[in-house]
Length: 262
Image (tube, rainbow, N blue to C red; front, side, top):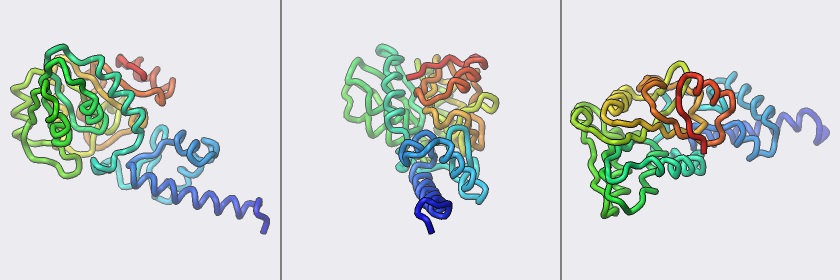
């Protein structure tokens, strides 16, 4: 058998596909462009890999990449959400420019909002409301910050507080700016997330802030999860990274969404 023949290429593709599945299990999502760069192959080769794996029921292709095949309700544990770290940092840095001076903010659960919490400056004084324990713990060392959690049942998957206590707190809250997260952003289906209880809290956040800013890396654009928690009209600004495609930008802007690309 020739080392350069079809059989050898098929073996290499099979090995690459197994590594793609391993990355998918670790990060909860893979990006076509990132995979092509990582394996030093063309984007078309990666697309063929993803098509092959989808036909065998091993993943679900979405715009720009793939998610696990379990269903649209798949949700990676919070400690495993390590993908697109550089993009999330850029988004969080851009969000710092929208902090109110001496006001109050609401930080939703999510890996990008958690990165924003890590980058919050030591001053001026700011009141922070959050529904997630990791964010609250990260902020305890900031002397200039007053930190409040919403209360409620803590979901082990995301460490977010949900249900009646959280909703009651949000009903009494008036924050200047809410920095929101999502699992999927689609021009027709809006913002979606896997868990109904968490969607309910996210939906209530919309009425609790004067300005609503969505922090969303490009891998989530075009994706649809189980439960809608907002429409595009509910969001005042989307901050995303430059991995978003021109077609996606055009579609979202045509729908009336203001977008800041970083």
